[in-house]
Image 1 (cartoon, rainbow, N blue to C red):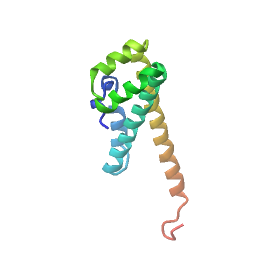
Image 2: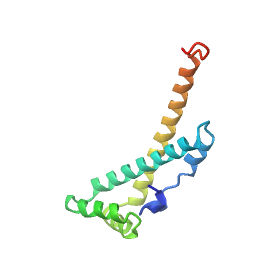
Image 3: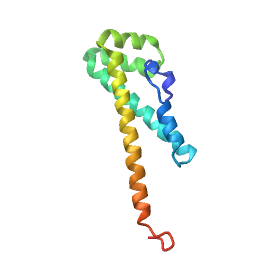
Image 4: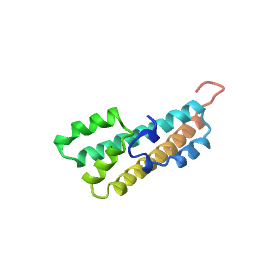
Amino acid sequence: MKTQNLFYAHLVDLRDLEELLNHKDIEHEERVSLLSTAQETIHIEVIHFILEQIPDHERHVFMHNVEHKPHDTGLWLYVTKRIDGADDKIVNIIHQVKQDFKEALHEYKEASEEWLSGVDIRHGY
């Protein structure tokens, strides 16, 4: 799922995550996969937030539209009419997901280095 194809794309800036991943010693495919995971997580969290805020009887139609025309600017118009301060709230959600992603990446790196420092490669343990 490409972020630029979503109705809230104007709120998403992943350049900092791309830069962070570009400076990690990982394969290109893993970099792409990790960035995709971040994008998908942002999408899940944003949609979850919106669904919590809109009336129950409107959720099915909203999800149908997200699924079939995720780029439709009418979706953003709907969200801003239904949720006070939608821009700021969704920006905060995106920021939190990005922070969590950065922390998880850092913790993963530390755990990997710790594990590797205890492995004797010559003997396989």
